[in-house]
Amino acid sequence: MLRRHIFIIAILLLLATPSHVLAFGGCEEDCLKCHKLNKADAEKVLKPILPDVKVDSVRMSPAKGLWEVALKTRGKKGIAYVDFSLQNIIVGNIIRIKTKVNLTQTRMMEISKVDVSRINLDNALLYGSKKAAHKVIVFADPD
Image 1 (spheres, one colour):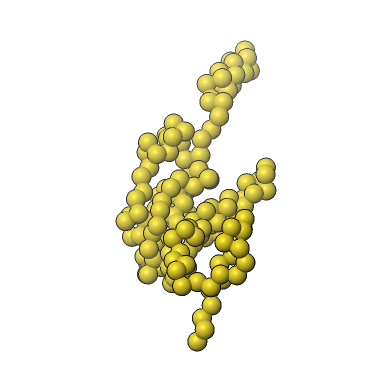
Image 2 (spheres, helix red, strand yellow; image 1 turned 180 degrees about the vertical axis):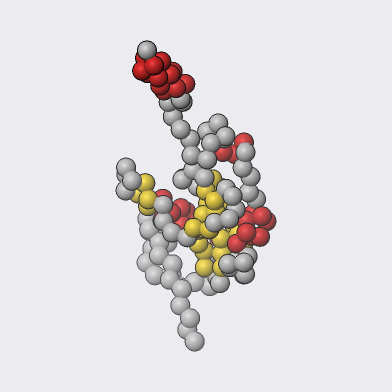
């Protein structure tokens, strides 16, 4: 009789358990409802580690529970990840296991793009045709 009650209680507990479990719980799968981080706050978090940091943008990272912080330090762009507790900084790559795509590298390419239309070419030397399908801009220091 006792075994039967224990079995029934175990079944009821299994049925009462959610079918999915969320890391960090409480966000109802929309982390932005509970968690906020702006550029100024991200700079405050990073300053003890990178005193000359300038944060360009903050957004949700591809991995839940982390912020993606696009930054500049010592003249170089980079990406760091800050956890929701604002206690940990992660510098490294996030790689999607299923597709083997390096999401950090993809994002670095996005934030490092140069808008070539903003480059002043008034004093440039032109080689080849102005109507060429592809253009190459070479920077040189004659000194």
